[in-house]
Amino acid sequence: MNTLKHVAIIMDGNGRWAKRRFRPRVWGHVRGANRVSEIATTAAKLNLESLTLYAFSTENWSRPTEEVKSLFKLLKKFLIKEKKTILKNNIRFDVIGNYKVLETHIVELIDDLKESTANNTGLNLMLAINYGGRAEVVDAVNRFLKNNPLRELTESDITDNLYNPINQNIDLLIRTSGDQRVSNFLLWQISYSEFYFTDTMWPEFTAKEFKAILEKVATRERRFGGLTEDSQLNPKQVLSRDKQKTFS
Image (cartoon, rainbow, N blue to C red):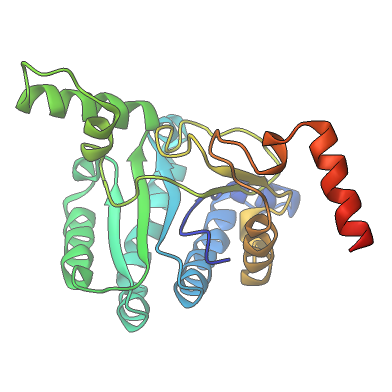
């Protein structure tokens, strides 16, 4: 499991989970919010370097006004309620996305939690709020061009100008609720990520399943575009080597 350092999760299925139980979508978001602390604490105990959670995308503004208001009420509650737990577990908190456009009190709570945990050395917990992957890449390019108008940019330049350069490469992207798409999430950072799609909806996603996924994915062979020892051998060499193993 130590090969997985950076994990990201698309926390999907809250509304559908509630609908199947004949409850309002907001009820699903309330239950889903309770999972965030459990999964973040588990990630910290497993010594992951970072966990990025897709909390609110730039596209989510198109949802019904009351649902959007409820989501931000839940965010405010999380920032207040979970501060003690975050500090206790040595977690460093951050946000990626343009959160400065939110209600002043929420912005103040985010900034306070970021400042209070800035010197923590454990898990980097990042919430993607008012975030879009394409917007992040565009902003990174524009930020670079503003500071370096006469120089051609490189991949490293884009990486260095992302919202949070600490979270450069995601090792594993998990999406709950069965859908198999990335939904404009961390497009630059997931270029060599492993993907794991689970049918479990976010309100039922437990620490046990989270750990099981990490253990399973950790056994996958990750070549990053390169070749393994076996793939560099021709078929006769592989057969000869396997025979030697059989009779040794």
